[in-house]
Amino acid sequence: MSMQQLARARPPARRAASAAAPSPRPRLCRPRRVLVAASSSSSPNADDAPTTPPAGVVAALDPLTYKHLLVALIDNNPYLDANSQAAVAAAADLARAHGSDRISFVLIDEPGRGSADSAGADASVRLRTVAWHLRERGCATPFDLLERPVGEKGAASALVGDVADEVGADLLLLSSAGVHAGHVDANLLAEFVSCPVLLLP
Image (cartoon, rainbow, N blue to C red; front, side, top):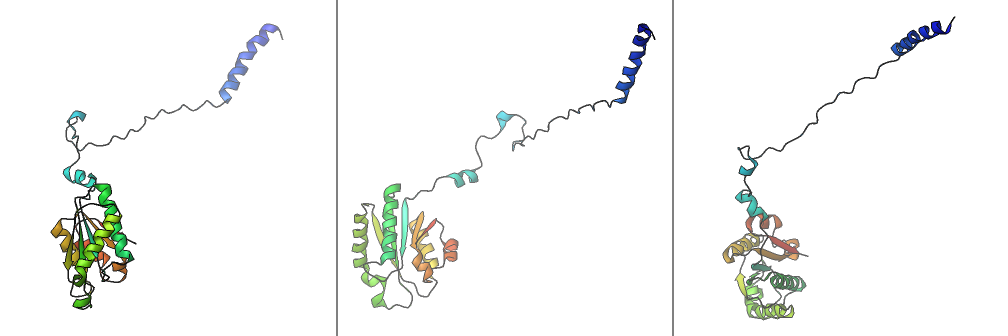
């Protein structure tokens, strides 16, 4: 076979080989899905969208203020036991840190105690004791002392809620010892007290 005949014979062989090889699959270009958050405004213009959240949301985001603190003391010791002293100290520290205008202390009689053993019988001693503890913590915030008798066990929770509304308190401080002893009920506090509640160990 001559060289010219070999040259003519090669192209069909290459064509057969290329026909036998599988052709690559074409790539499909799928468009990306873009999720757009729907605006609460009915206008398609972004400039027309509201710039401030609803009033309810703003109220929820407002920082808490502690201008009037309420401390519930369920304690028959005229010089206050360790739990009550811790509550007074915490109130003093919060009042200093937040620039509170007033601290109210409510003395609640323990159910089943006689009038001679009640908190009201030693109110003057308690008043001096509370004033001494506040001075010891460097707190000069004005304070007042309220006396509230409670007739039956469990009624102190509603009574504390009434006092919180009466004085306009924006924070209630309470020793958890009163909850453990059953003088107040934490679930009822959540129902009757309209301000934040701080339970101290």
